[in-house]
Length: 83
Image (cartoon, rainbow, N blue to C red):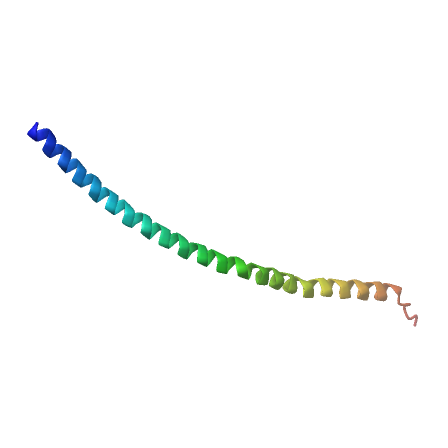
């Protein structure tokens, strides 16, 4: 019986140490999670600026294509000179 009591006491002590360790790890994980959430919010808040920049970057290409189309239409409509 003495052996069983000693084993139970050892298991209790190990369980207590494991609980303490788990508590510390959970606290560290929660802290890291909050840090990561903060970083994700910062990144997501800048996505609108990235989208605006992408649209602004494609606009000059669209304008160039439009100007080229107008130029080709004008060149095709221009009468040729006969010599």
